[in-house]
Image (cartoon, rainbow, N blue to C red; front, side):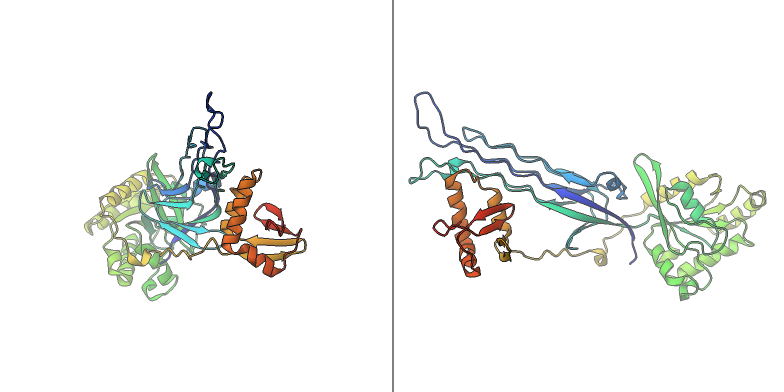
Length: 427
């Protein structure tokens, strides 16, 4: 199935978790109060949410960065910092969300109100109240908030047209589309100007839009692949309503109308059953205006409504669009096709897995869990540093560094931190 694609690239970053607090209760007659440092609040997620009133990604031309707020810091008396609200970014239905760096498909957003968390807020760091024990009654240890997640996203919009513009070559479809939308199709006075479907969005009112597709001109034999053929007929299959433009300068507009409908029916019988609004174009020309009563009677006799328009002057255009919108609203919703469902695959990744890279001046440890732990460590507190060493040992990193040949005084890089290896303390 061919879709009309609109693309955008954006950067998203969640909020950092709030830092936990190292604090001890201080009361007038209690000189050695216990730990009461509170936890940090959770950072905000960044969430994409389907807004059914949107149908383009144009808003992302002006705003490309979306950064959620960080969580609040923990306070004394076990007070937890304030958690940040999620940052909700509206997107139109039919938006495919990819990780721009890896190409991984993260989600297919189709239903109104559907949500996808693209980056999760960092959890708040624990205050020192959590680290008290019978052996350590004065814990000078807490956690900083978890670092934020960040991602470059590529958004693709599978924009399915509500209305298809059909007609013989040079009937004025591209002029019609350019007149009512911001689309800029190639326009010239010769057949087959349009070699690919053009797309435009017509704004009828503040809260009402129509997506229109200018389908390339059909000629006799298109259902057999003659001329521009099958590729273009496939575009019409997904439209709900057809605006059938008749060329007022044609030798026989009524014969053209019959030919196009025959081609549609031969390709797919369902196409012939789609609602059609007929528009007799080029009424700004006196010769065409003189033919209008005859053509109007012939089309109405065949059971179709017909409007007189001029794509050049704009005469009658608004009435045709509003009529198309009325017909569209009266149709039942499309059933969700199984073939349109895109499975979301997320490879399982263990954040504790690590690799060790030898550098000219030391070693770099690549490990997501360890990088997060380093960022959450209060390096100014000895107890926090010793806890980080225990994490190194538990993950097997210490043993792996020794196997890689680490020596006393070597620099070991973990995330943004450069640590000196000391054998007696293991870093």
